[in-house]
Image 1 (tube, rainbow, N blue to C red):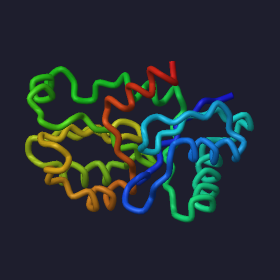
Image 2 (cartoon, rainbow, N blue to C red; image 1 turned 180 degrees about the vertical axis):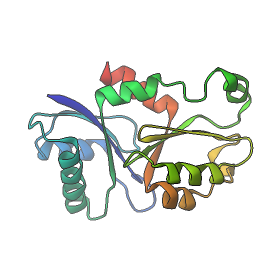
Image 3 (cartoon, helix red, strand yellow; image 1 turned 180 degrees about the horizontal axis):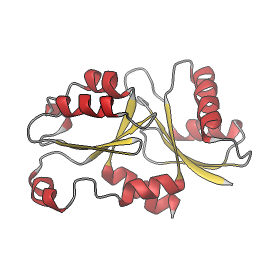
Image 4 (cartoon, rainbow, N blue to C red; image 1 turned 30 degrees about the vertical axis):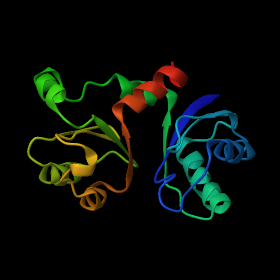
Length: 183
């Protein structure tokens, strides 16, 4: 059985309020096993006993969560192996150690629905403010803002337009999920 992490976009923001035990109940009702949540921000870990393809499982999760919760829920699904790989990446490299240490922002990971093409990557370069670092690897945008997220100049709507919608987690959250559930 494959272990997955579903990163849900926009949970517990505005009118979208759900408690972790309720989220676990919904995933269990969908036939998923060993369901656990991490923090109250839409991170759900589970086993898929049916062995569905990732694409089919993602579409089913979105459809069933939409029905159960009464609003659209974008799901960014990653296997446990992928989460471990994301956590192990050093996207900014040795050259950026001083910039990472000096940054007032935390390293972020934007989980995307697909691997960006060259044109999309170029659009992201144009959106990156001076002082920030952005690196795309696989289906993730690794971003080191030079300031806190509430102070950033990044136009997140333009970022969504360039790459498609994604959902953002701190690199630390990804690392913690990987170490607790994926190794």
